Amino acid sequence: MFQATRRRLAIWYTAVTALLLLLFASGVYLYVRNTLIERIDDTLNHVVEVVEPSLVIEAVNSKGTQFWVNVEASFRDNADTRDDDRIDLEWFSPTGELLWSTLSEPLNIPIHPNRMGETVRVVGGDGKMGGQGDKETRGQGDKGTRRQGDVSLNSPILLRQVTERIEVGRQVLGYLRVSHPWFEVTKPSRQLIFDLALGISLMLVSVGASGWFLSGKAMQPVRESYQHLKQFTADASHELRSPIALIQTNVQVALDELEVTQTQGVNVEHYQQQLKVVEKLTQRLGKLVNDLLFLARQDSGISAYKFSCCPLDALLMEVVEEQQLFAAEKNITLSLNLIDSPEIEANPQLLDDWFTLMGNWEQLVRLFTNLIGNALRYSQENGRVEVELLGVEIVNARALRVKVSDNGIGIPSEAIPRLFDRFYRVDPARSHGTANNFTKNTVGSGLGLAICQAIIENHHGQVQIESTVGKGTTVTVTLPIILES
Image (cartoon, rainbow, N blue to C red):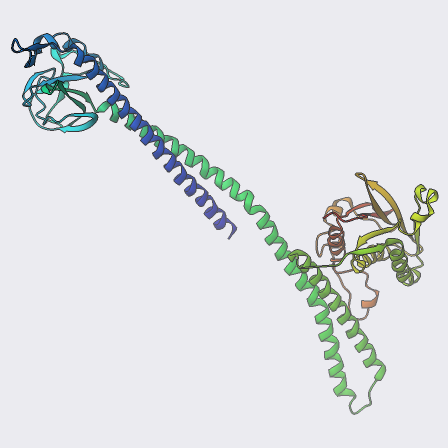
Protein backbone atom coordinates (compact mmCIF):
# COMPACT_ATOMS: atom_id res chain seq x y z
CA MET A 1 0.00 0.00 0.00
CA PHE A 2 2.70 2.48 0.96
CA GLN A 3 4.85 1.54 -2.05
CA ALA A 4 1.91 2.10 -4.40
CA THR A 5 1.18 5.48 -2.82
CA ARG A 6 4.85 6.42 -2.99
CA ARG A 7 4.95 5.41 -6.65
CA ARG A 8 1.86 7.48 -7.44
CA LEU A 9 3.33 10.52 -5.66
CA ALA A 10 6.57 10.18 -7.61
CA ILE A 11 4.63 9.89 -10.88
CA TRP A 12 2.59 12.98 -10.04
CA TYR A 13 5.74 14.92 -9.16
CA THR A 14 7.29 13.93 -12.47
CA ALA A 15 4.13 14.60 -14.51
CA VAL A 16 3.60 18.07 -13.07
CA THR A 17 7.27 18.94 -13.54
CA ALA A 18 7.16 17.62 -17.12
CA LEU A 19 4.17 19.84 -17.88
CA LEU A 20 5.89 22.89 -16.41
CA LEU A 21 9.10 22.14 -18.28
CA LEU A 22 7.18 21.62 -21.51
CA LEU A 23 5.50 25.01 -21.13
CA PHE A 24 8.83 26.61 -20.32
CA ALA A 25 10.58 24.94 -23.28
CA SER A 26 7.76 25.98 -25.63
CA GLY A 27 8.09 29.57 -24.47
CA VAL A 28 11.87 29.52 -24.93
CA TYR A 29 11.56 27.95 -28.39
CA LEU A 30 8.99 30.48 -29.59
CA TYR A 31 11.01 33.36 -28.19
CA VAL A 32 14.26 32.22 -29.85
CA ARG A 33 12.53 31.44 -33.14
CA ASN A 34 10.82 34.83 -33.25
CA THR A 35 14.12 36.48 -32.38
CA LEU A 36 15.85 34.73 -35.29
CA ILE A 37 13.08 35.76 -37.69
CA GLU A 38 13.22 39.35 -36.50
CA ARG A 39 16.99 39.34 -36.95
CA ILE A 40 16.68 38.09 -40.56
CA ASP A 41 13.96 40.65 -41.30
CA ASP A 42 16.15 43.41 -39.88
CA THR A 43 19.02 42.20 -42.06
CA LEU A 44 16.86 42.16 -45.18
CA ASN A 45 15.48 45.64 -44.50
CA HIS A 46 19.00 46.89 -43.88
CA VAL A 47 20.09 45.54 -47.27
CA VAL A 48 17.14 47.35 -48.87
CA GLU A 49 18.14 50.56 -47.12
CA VAL A 50 21.71 50.18 -48.41
CA VAL A 51 20.84 49.18 -51.98
CA GLU A 52 18.04 51.69 -52.57
CA PRO A 53 20.24 54.84 -52.35
CA SER A 54 22.82 53.21 -54.65
CA LEU A 55 20.36 52.80 -57.51
CA VAL A 56 21.34 54.85 -60.59
CA ILE A 57 18.19 56.66 -61.67
CA GLU A 58 18.30 58.48 -65.03
CA ALA A 59 15.79 60.72 -66.75
CA VAL A 60 14.14 59.38 -69.92
CA ASN A 61 13.41 62.79 -71.46
CA SER A 62 14.84 66.23 -71.22
CA LYS A 63 11.87 67.47 -69.20
CA GLY A 64 12.70 65.10 -66.35
CA THR A 65 9.17 63.74 -66.06
CA GLN A 66 10.04 60.14 -66.78
CA PHE A 67 12.78 58.12 -65.13
CA TRP A 68 14.31 54.67 -65.34
CA VAL A 69 16.87 52.67 -63.36
CA ASN A 70 20.19 51.85 -64.98
CA VAL A 71 20.35 48.20 -63.91
CA GLU A 72 23.93 47.56 -65.01
CA ALA A 73 25.26 50.63 -63.21
CA SER A 74 23.11 50.06 -60.13
CA PHE A 75 23.90 46.40 -59.43
CA ARG A 76 27.40 46.20 -60.76
CA ASP A 77 28.94 46.24 -57.25
CA ASN A 78 26.12 44.54 -55.29
CA ALA A 79 26.63 41.09 -56.80
CA ASP A 80 29.96 40.62 -55.05
CA THR A 81 28.80 41.52 -51.57
CA ARG A 82 25.53 39.69 -51.16
CA ASP A 83 27.21 36.28 -50.69
CA ASP A 84 28.70 37.25 -47.35
CA ASP A 85 25.29 36.96 -45.64
CA ARG A 86 23.68 34.48 -48.06
CA ILE A 87 21.45 37.23 -49.36
CA ASP A 88 20.16 37.29 -52.97
CA LEU A 89 18.88 40.34 -54.82
CA GLU A 90 16.30 40.58 -57.59
CA TRP A 91 15.26 43.65 -59.61
CA PHE A 92 11.90 43.74 -61.38
CA SER A 93 10.42 46.22 -63.82
CA PRO A 94 7.28 48.15 -62.92
CA THR A 95 5.31 45.48 -64.78
CA GLY A 96 6.87 42.66 -62.70
CA GLU A 97 9.38 41.42 -65.26
CA LEU A 98 12.65 40.11 -63.82
CA LEU A 99 15.48 42.28 -65.10
CA TRP A 100 18.41 41.27 -62.89
CA SER A 101 19.06 38.61 -60.24
CA THR A 102 21.88 37.03 -58.30
CA LEU A 103 20.11 33.66 -58.62
CA SER A 104 21.08 31.29 -61.41
CA GLU A 105 17.43 30.25 -61.82
CA PRO A 106 14.37 32.51 -61.48
CA LEU A 107 12.22 31.77 -58.47
CA ASN A 108 8.97 32.29 -60.38
CA ILE A 109 7.34 33.95 -57.38
CA PRO A 110 4.74 36.70 -57.95
CA ILE A 111 5.72 40.22 -56.94
CA HIS A 112 3.87 42.01 -54.14
CA PRO A 113 5.44 44.64 -51.89
CA ASN A 114 6.04 43.51 -48.32
CA ARG A 115 8.49 45.21 -46.01
CA MET A 116 7.48 43.15 -42.94
CA GLY A 117 9.02 39.97 -44.31
CA GLU A 118 7.34 36.78 -45.48
CA THR A 119 8.27 33.15 -45.83
CA VAL A 120 7.86 31.57 -49.27
CA ARG A 121 8.17 27.97 -50.45
CA VAL A 122 9.94 27.32 -53.75
CA VAL A 123 9.38 23.99 -55.53
CA GLY A 124 10.39 22.69 -58.99
CA GLY A 125 13.00 23.40 -61.61
CA ASP A 126 16.18 21.62 -62.64
CA GLY A 127 18.50 24.53 -62.17
CA LYS A 128 20.60 25.55 -59.24
CA MET A 129 20.15 28.33 -56.78
CA GLY A 130 23.30 30.14 -55.98
CA GLY A 131 25.42 33.19 -56.36
CA GLN A 132 27.52 34.29 -59.27
CA GLY A 133 30.77 32.42 -59.56
CA ASP A 134 29.27 29.62 -57.37
CA LYS A 135 31.22 30.84 -54.34
CA GLU A 136 31.52 28.83 -51.14
CA THR A 137 29.85 30.49 -48.17
CA ARG A 138 29.50 29.59 -44.48
CA GLY A 139 26.15 30.20 -42.75
CA GLN A 140 25.84 31.16 -39.09
CA GLY A 141 25.70 28.01 -37.01
CA ASP A 142 27.02 25.74 -39.79
CA LYS A 143 29.75 23.27 -38.83
CA GLY A 144 31.15 23.18 -42.37
CA THR A 145 31.14 25.08 -45.62
CA ARG A 146 28.25 24.84 -47.99
CA ARG A 147 27.97 25.91 -51.64
CA GLN A 148 24.86 27.84 -52.50
CA GLY A 149 24.96 26.28 -55.93
CA ASP A 150 24.49 22.85 -54.32
CA VAL A 151 20.93 23.69 -53.19
CA SER A 152 18.75 22.10 -55.85
CA LEU A 153 15.33 23.39 -56.67
CA ASN A 154 14.16 19.80 -57.14
CA SER A 155 13.50 19.78 -53.40
CA PRO A 156 11.34 22.37 -51.64
CA ILE A 157 13.22 25.46 -50.46
CA LEU A 158 12.06 27.99 -47.91
CA LEU A 159 13.09 31.63 -48.24
CA ARG A 160 12.52 34.73 -46.19
CA GLN A 161 11.85 37.70 -48.47
CA VAL A 162 11.33 41.45 -48.29
CA THR A 163 10.02 43.30 -51.38
CA GLU A 164 10.35 47.08 -51.71
CA ARG A 165 8.64 49.21 -54.35
CA ILE A 166 10.97 51.92 -55.70
CA GLU A 167 9.24 55.16 -56.65
CA VAL A 168 10.17 58.66 -57.79
CA GLY A 169 7.28 60.88 -57.02
CA ARG A 170 4.29 58.90 -58.19
CA GLN A 171 6.20 56.96 -60.84
CA VAL A 172 7.04 53.31 -59.99
CA LEU A 173 10.55 52.54 -61.21
CA GLY A 174 10.55 48.87 -60.24
CA TYR A 175 10.68 46.41 -57.38
CA LEU A 176 13.66 45.30 -55.32
CA ARG A 177 13.31 41.86 -53.69
CA VAL A 178 15.80 40.60 -51.16
CA SER A 179 15.84 36.87 -50.20
CA HIS A 180 17.48 34.99 -47.36
CA PRO A 181 17.64 31.19 -46.88
CA TRP A 182 15.17 29.99 -44.24
CA PHE A 183 17.58 27.39 -42.85
CA GLU A 184 19.20 30.22 -40.91
CA VAL A 185 16.08 29.88 -38.74
CA THR A 186 15.31 26.18 -39.04
CA LYS A 187 18.80 24.90 -38.26
CA PRO A 188 19.25 26.79 -34.95
CA SER A 189 15.61 25.99 -34.13
CA ARG A 190 16.16 22.27 -34.62
CA GLN A 191 19.33 22.40 -32.56
CA LEU A 192 17.43 24.26 -29.85
CA ILE A 193 14.67 21.63 -29.91
CA PHE A 194 17.26 18.89 -29.52
CA ASP A 195 18.97 20.70 -26.66
CA LEU A 196 15.67 21.40 -24.91
CA ALA A 197 14.52 17.80 -25.35
CA LEU A 198 17.81 16.50 -23.96
CA GLY A 199 17.68 18.94 -21.05
CA ILE A 200 14.06 18.11 -20.27
CA SER A 201 14.78 14.37 -20.42
CA LEU A 202 17.69 14.69 -18.00
CA MET A 203 15.62 16.96 -15.78
CA LEU A 204 12.71 14.51 -15.72
CA VAL A 205 15.03 11.67 -14.78
CA SER A 206 16.39 13.81 -11.95
CA VAL A 207 12.89 14.87 -10.89
CA GLY A 208 11.71 11.26 -11.00
CA ALA A 209 14.55 10.16 -8.73
CA SER A 210 14.05 13.18 -6.47
CA GLY A 211 10.29 12.59 -6.43
CA TRP A 212 10.80 8.98 -5.40
CA PHE A 213 13.15 10.08 -2.62
CA LEU A 214 10.95 12.94 -1.42
CA SER A 215 7.78 10.86 -1.58
CA GLY A 216 9.53 8.31 0.60
CA LYS A 217 10.38 11.07 3.07
CA ALA A 218 6.80 12.35 2.93
CA MET A 219 5.40 8.86 3.47
CA GLN A 220 7.66 8.14 6.43
CA PRO A 221 5.49 9.97 9.02
CA VAL A 222 2.40 8.35 7.53
CA ARG A 223 4.05 4.94 7.72
CA GLU A 224 5.07 5.56 11.33
CA SER A 225 1.57 6.78 12.22
CA TYR A 226 0.09 3.71 10.59
CA GLN A 227 2.46 1.45 12.49
CA HIS A 228 1.58 3.24 15.72
CA LEU A 229 -2.10 2.82 14.91
CA LYS A 230 -1.63 -0.89 14.26
CA GLN A 231 0.35 -1.25 17.48
CA PHE A 232 -2.24 0.81 19.34
CA THR A 233 -5.07 -1.36 18.02
CA ALA A 234 -3.23 -4.57 18.88
CA ASP A 235 -2.34 -3.37 22.37
CA ALA A 236 -5.84 -2.02 23.02
CA SER A 237 -7.33 -5.33 21.90
CA HIS A 238 -4.94 -7.16 24.22
CA GLU A 239 -5.77 -4.91 27.16
CA LEU A 240 -9.51 -5.18 26.62
CA ARG A 241 -9.48 -8.91 25.95
CA SER A 242 -7.87 -9.84 29.26
CA PRO A 243 -10.46 -8.35 31.66
CA ILE A 244 -13.34 -9.34 29.40
CA ALA A 245 -12.11 -12.94 29.36
CA LEU A 246 -11.80 -12.93 33.15
CA ILE A 247 -15.30 -11.49 33.52
CA GLN A 248 -16.70 -14.17 31.23
CA THR A 249 -14.84 -16.90 33.11
CA ASN A 250 -16.08 -15.78 36.53
CA VAL A 251 -19.65 -15.38 35.34
CA GLN A 252 -19.55 -18.80 33.68
CA VAL A 253 -18.16 -20.41 36.86
CA ALA A 254 -20.87 -18.73 38.93
CA LEU A 255 -23.59 -19.98 36.56
CA ASP A 256 -22.23 -23.51 36.51
CA GLU A 257 -21.98 -23.67 40.30
CA LEU A 258 -25.47 -22.24 40.62
CA GLU A 259 -26.91 -25.31 38.89
CA VAL A 260 -25.00 -27.65 41.22
CA THR A 261 -25.93 -25.83 44.41
CA GLN A 262 -29.62 -25.43 43.65
CA THR A 263 -30.36 -28.73 45.44
CA GLN A 264 -27.49 -28.55 47.94
CA GLY A 265 -27.85 -25.02 49.23
CA VAL A 266 -26.16 -21.79 48.11
CA ASN A 267 -22.66 -20.75 49.16
CA VAL A 268 -23.22 -17.04 49.57
CA GLU A 269 -19.60 -16.20 50.39
CA HIS A 270 -18.34 -17.89 47.26
CA TYR A 271 -20.70 -15.87 45.09
CA GLN A 272 -19.73 -12.67 46.85
CA GLN A 273 -16.09 -13.36 46.05
CA GLN A 274 -16.91 -14.00 42.40
CA LEU A 275 -18.95 -10.81 42.16
CA LYS A 276 -16.17 -8.76 43.76
CA VAL A 277 -13.72 -10.04 41.17
CA VAL A 278 -16.18 -9.14 38.41
CA GLU A 279 -16.58 -5.69 39.96
CA LYS A 280 -12.82 -5.12 40.05
CA LEU A 281 -12.41 -6.30 36.50
CA THR A 282 -15.23 -4.03 35.39
CA GLN A 283 -13.63 -1.08 37.16
CA ARG A 284 -10.33 -1.83 35.49
CA LEU A 285 -12.03 -2.14 32.11
CA GLY A 286 -13.86 1.14 32.65
CA LYS A 287 -10.63 2.89 33.62
CA LEU A 288 -8.93 1.56 30.50
CA VAL A 289 -11.78 2.78 28.30
CA ASN A 290 -11.65 6.21 29.96
CA ASP A 291 -7.90 6.40 29.35
CA LEU A 292 -8.34 5.47 25.71
CA LEU A 293 -11.11 8.04 25.35
CA PHE A 294 -8.93 10.72 26.95
CA LEU A 295 -6.04 10.05 24.58
CA ALA A 296 -8.35 9.85 21.56
CA ARG A 297 -9.79 13.26 22.41
CA GLN A 298 -6.29 14.67 22.83
CA ASP A 299 -5.26 13.36 19.43
CA SER A 300 -8.36 14.73 17.72
CA GLY A 301 -8.05 18.12 19.42
CA ILE A 302 -11.70 18.12 20.55
CA SER A 303 -10.86 18.41 24.24
CA ALA A 304 -11.86 21.75 25.69
CA TYR A 305 -10.76 22.06 29.29
CA LYS A 306 -11.27 25.22 31.30
CA PHE A 307 -8.19 26.64 32.97
CA SER A 308 -8.32 28.57 36.21
CA CYS A 309 -6.08 29.46 39.14
CA CYS A 310 -4.88 26.24 40.76
CA PRO A 311 -2.91 26.27 44.02
CA LEU A 312 -0.46 23.51 43.23
CA ASP A 313 0.64 23.11 46.85
CA ALA A 314 -2.93 22.34 47.98
CA LEU A 315 -3.39 20.00 45.04
CA LEU A 316 -0.25 18.02 45.89
CA MET A 317 -1.26 17.81 49.53
CA GLU A 318 -4.58 16.29 48.48
CA VAL A 319 -2.94 13.77 46.11
CA VAL A 320 -0.28 12.77 48.68
CA GLU A 321 -2.95 12.28 51.31
CA GLU A 322 -4.92 9.99 48.98
CA GLN A 323 -1.80 7.95 48.21
CA GLN A 324 -0.79 7.54 51.85
CA LEU A 325 -3.04 4.48 52.23
CA PHE A 326 -1.28 2.63 49.43
CA ALA A 327 2.10 3.76 50.76
CA ALA A 328 1.23 2.41 54.22
CA GLU A 329 0.40 -1.03 52.76
CA LYS A 330 4.01 -1.31 51.50
CA ASN A 331 5.59 0.53 54.46
CA ILE A 332 6.78 3.27 52.11
CA THR A 333 7.49 6.73 53.45
CA LEU A 334 5.69 9.30 51.28
CA SER A 335 6.54 12.95 51.95
CA LEU A 336 5.84 16.38 50.41
CA ASN A 337 8.35 19.21 50.60
CA LEU A 338 7.42 22.79 49.71
CA ILE A 339 10.55 24.82 49.07
CA ASP A 340 9.95 28.51 49.63
CA SER A 341 11.78 31.18 47.71
CA PRO A 342 13.79 33.92 49.46
CA GLU A 343 11.33 36.36 47.92
CA ILE A 344 8.59 35.02 50.21
CA GLU A 345 10.61 35.83 53.31
CA ALA A 346 11.09 39.37 52.03
CA ASN A 347 7.39 39.74 51.10
CA PRO A 348 5.04 37.39 53.08
CA GLN A 349 2.09 38.54 50.95
CA LEU A 350 3.42 36.36 48.12
CA LEU A 351 2.92 33.21 50.21
CA ASP A 352 -0.71 32.64 49.19
CA ASP A 353 -0.09 32.93 45.44
CA TRP A 354 3.47 31.68 45.17
CA PHE A 355 2.51 28.11 44.17
CA THR A 356 -0.57 29.09 42.12
CA LEU A 357 -0.69 28.58 38.36
CA MET A 358 -3.20 28.60 35.52
CA GLY A 359 -4.36 25.06 34.85
CA ASN A 360 -7.09 22.46 34.98
CA TRP A 361 -7.52 20.98 38.44
CA GLU A 362 -8.79 17.58 37.32
CA GLN A 363 -6.01 17.08 34.79
CA LEU A 364 -3.30 18.10 37.25
CA VAL A 365 -4.73 15.75 39.90
CA ARG A 366 -4.64 12.94 37.35
CA LEU A 367 -1.08 13.85 36.34
CA PHE A 368 0.44 13.75 39.82
CA THR A 369 -1.71 10.80 40.92
CA ASN A 370 -0.21 8.78 38.08
CA LEU A 371 3.36 9.91 38.80
CA ILE A 372 3.17 9.34 42.56
CA GLY A 373 1.27 6.07 42.04
CA ASN A 374 4.00 4.79 39.70
CA ALA A 375 6.69 5.75 42.21
CA LEU A 376 4.88 3.81 44.96
CA ARG A 377 4.11 0.86 42.70
CA TYR A 378 7.73 0.31 41.66
CA SER A 379 9.28 1.01 45.05
CA GLN A 380 10.16 -1.85 47.31
CA GLU A 381 8.84 -2.22 50.84
CA ASN A 382 10.31 0.12 53.45
CA GLY A 383 11.24 2.45 50.59
CA ARG A 384 10.94 6.21 50.30
CA VAL A 385 9.08 8.49 47.89
CA GLU A 386 9.64 12.23 48.03
CA VAL A 387 7.56 14.92 46.30
CA GLU A 388 9.17 18.33 46.03
CA LEU A 389 7.59 21.62 44.87
CA LEU A 390 9.56 24.79 44.20
CA GLY A 391 9.39 27.91 42.06
CA VAL A 392 11.94 28.54 39.29
CA GLU A 393 12.76 31.14 36.65
CA ILE A 394 12.69 30.01 32.99
CA VAL A 395 13.46 32.51 30.22
CA ASN A 396 12.50 35.50 32.37
CA ALA A 397 9.24 33.83 33.38
CA ARG A 398 8.18 32.09 36.58
CA ALA A 399 7.36 28.41 36.63
CA LEU A 400 6.67 25.68 39.17
CA ARG A 401 8.75 22.53 39.27
CA VAL A 402 7.59 19.26 40.83
CA LYS A 403 10.02 16.41 41.46
CA VAL A 404 8.81 12.91 42.30
CA SER A 405 11.74 10.76 43.49
CA ASP A 406 11.86 7.16 44.66
CA ASN A 407 14.54 4.62 45.55
CA GLY A 408 12.87 1.76 43.73
CA ILE A 409 13.98 -0.69 41.06
CA GLY A 410 14.84 2.01 38.49
CA ILE A 411 14.46 2.04 34.72
CA PRO A 412 17.02 0.88 32.11
CA SER A 413 18.48 3.76 30.13
CA GLU A 414 17.43 2.25 26.77
CA ALA A 415 13.79 2.17 27.91
CA ILE A 416 13.53 5.83 29.01
CA PRO A 417 12.94 7.29 25.49
CA ARG A 418 9.94 4.96 25.03
CA LEU A 419 8.32 5.42 28.42
CA PHE A 420 5.70 7.81 27.03
CA ASP A 421 4.68 5.47 24.19
CA ARG A 422 1.18 4.14 24.60
CA PHE A 423 0.92 0.62 26.03
CA TYR A 424 4.68 0.48 26.45
CA ARG A 425 5.93 -1.18 29.61
CA VAL A 426 9.45 -1.97 30.63
CA ASP A 427 8.27 -5.40 31.73
CA PRO A 428 7.75 -7.36 28.49
CA ALA A 429 5.78 -10.12 30.21
CA ARG A 430 2.62 -7.98 30.14
CA SER A 431 1.04 -10.34 32.66
CA HIS A 432 -2.05 -9.14 34.41
CA GLY A 433 -2.54 -12.06 36.70
CA THR A 434 -5.58 -14.21 37.19
CA ALA A 435 -8.76 -13.72 39.11
CA ASN A 436 -7.11 -14.99 42.29
CA ASN A 437 -4.18 -12.58 42.34
CA PHE A 438 -5.77 -9.68 40.47
CA THR A 439 -5.77 -7.35 43.43
CA LYS A 440 -2.08 -8.04 44.02
CA ASN A 441 -1.02 -7.31 40.46
CA THR A 442 0.95 -4.10 40.07
CA VAL A 443 1.36 -3.97 36.29
CA GLY A 444 -0.65 -1.16 34.67
CA SER A 445 -2.09 -0.80 31.19
CA GLY A 446 0.84 1.25 29.88
CA LEU A 447 -1.25 4.38 29.30
CA GLY A 448 -0.43 6.28 32.49
CA LEU A 449 2.70 8.07 31.29
CA ALA A 450 1.16 8.75 27.87
CA ILE A 451 -1.71 10.50 29.64
CA CYS A 452 0.78 12.39 31.82
CA GLN A 453 2.61 13.65 28.76
CA ALA A 454 -0.64 14.79 27.14
CA ILE A 455 -1.63 16.72 30.28
CA ILE A 456 1.81 18.34 30.51
CA GLU A 457 1.61 19.39 26.86
CA ASN A 458 -1.85 20.87 27.48
CA HIS A 459 -0.26 23.04 30.19
CA HIS A 460 2.73 23.93 27.94
CA GLY A 461 5.08 22.23 30.38
CA GLN A 462 8.05 19.90 30.16
CA VAL A 463 8.88 16.55 31.70
CA GLN A 464 12.22 14.87 32.32
CA ILE A 465 13.04 11.42 33.69
CA GLU A 466 16.31 10.39 35.29
CA SER A 467 16.76 6.86 36.51
CA THR A 468 19.41 4.38 37.62
CA VAL A 469 18.68 0.68 37.77
CA GLY A 470 18.62 -0.47 41.39
CA LYS A 471 18.84 3.05 42.82
CA GLY A 472 15.64 4.80 41.86
CA THR A 473 13.93 7.23 39.52
CA THR A 474 13.27 10.98 39.53
CA VAL A 475 10.53 12.51 37.39
CA THR A 476 10.71 16.31 37.01
CA VAL A 477 7.70 18.26 35.74
CA THR A 478 8.01 21.98 34.97
CA LEU A 479 4.81 23.97 34.48
CA PRO A 480 4.63 27.69 33.58
CA ILE A 481 2.71 29.95 35.92
CA ILE A 482 0.80 31.62 33.06
CA LEU A 483 -0.14 29.74 29.89
CA GLU A 484 1.03 31.34 26.65
CA SER A 485 -1.66 31.91 24.05
